[in-house]
Amino acid sequence: MPQDKQQRPHRVPPDQEEMARRLYVRERLRIKKILAFKSSRFFKLLNALNVCCFFICWELIFCFIGPCHYKELVPETSQIKYSAKTDARGFRYIKEINVIWKGEKSDKIIVEDVVPVHASQSLRIRVGRDFILFKNLKVKLGEGNKAYRLAHASPLLFLAAMLIVVTSIGYFFNLNQQINTLPGMTFFNLLFVLAIVLI
Image (cartoon, rainbow, N blue to C red; front, top):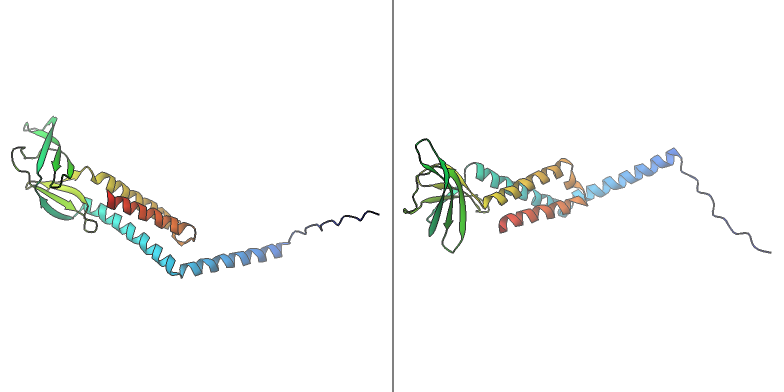
């Protein structure tokens, strides 16, 4: 005589009280896990790194817009490219100045202005650097006080602004307090700062 197959008992869905209790326990475990993570050294270290990266980028932008450390340099060679535009006095605009420093390092100064410099004279250049990474950001030509942008400062400023925006969004949505997102956010910030250092 064939044995009757044992059937699995039907699953009884939990009632509302049981569901509420399970959700409460799950939420308590999640909060406990987050609090344990926040009290760890790993959490504090990663957040400290994020804040350092954030302020390094703010410092770069601040030094480009405002005060910075100036150092006078005399290039080995300089090539001035003039624009077709002239001002009211008939002086031609300087479009850009290509300079080569000692050690074969070259820079391009974006001018687009009337500046009293001549190719035959030695060009006096004061290079403005930031205070932390010592990156060349802008220059002042001759005795003038007007600052002009260095062409290679553009990618630095773009990366700095990008990092500030992404980090601000991350902190706004509390991504720095999540176990899964904080390491990724820190890796992203360190990658950006490394790119700024290497440029």
